Image (cartoon, rainbow, N blue to C red; front, top):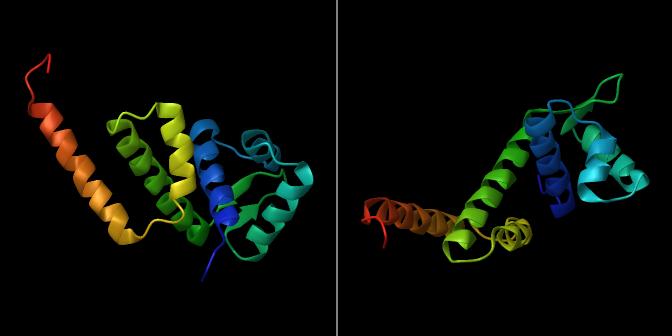
Length: 132
């Protein structure tokens, strides 16, 4: 099933907030992303109707398995790309911002090559004598 970038962003945000705060409500997503309450409400309704999230009686959002799988995939891409951009010398805040844009569009092949390069670079850094 094809899922839009905005839905991926919402799912990733729910995952990140859940890891940071434990419980997540729509207002937390509003505050994190800076979107209007109405926009987030509509998005949460669509995600719920499509089986990506559940909402309990207190308004807590829970990722269902399909939503969790998408969120974890996107968040993994985000972390990899941020790490890679920082390795290249990009400021961490800018790297994270750029990763957020790129995480949706890069192919699996490109991401795998970035992963291989980043791991190789990490390994080389760990064996360099201190001071280099």
